[in-house]
Length: 208
Image 1: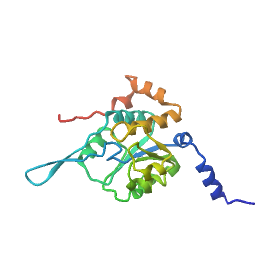
Image 2: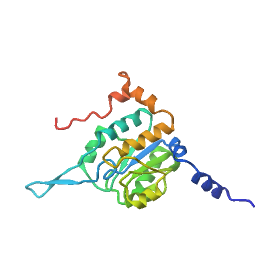
Image 3: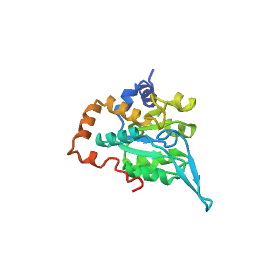
């Protein structure tokens, strides 16, 4: 019996291992709260009724993003909240694509695909909650952090050993670079004092 090509393609794709999926990735996307942070949102009130938002990011994730850049991966963040803290951290880490205020995150994914000229199969996404499901369902490599909701873990091709804010983002990057067989090589490139990409990595100004 002749089977339509689209069905054959779906069957083949579903049989791919996480490593197979990781080897195709050109763009790695992250949610922010609960993925690059532990999900805590601290707001310090000011006399004028406004507040200052505080988030804590993992330095391990920052190093991982630097390694991803050295390896040639593009990095993007997609988050529902609007946060100056996120904008500052994204600037420090030289994030290629930052989408804030995204209630329906799949729209940001569509914009990214158009901007990068890549396919969905070449995109990975790291999420932790149900708002991430529309993107996780579309990308070629769906990743959940260890602290993710059960619905997200059920959708994921890979679950990180560590939780968001505690190295889960780094786990995703290490997995992809290991699957590509370039993790150790990329580390040595980063450690090379003459590597221009490494010199630019995560130069934050803090309170200076």
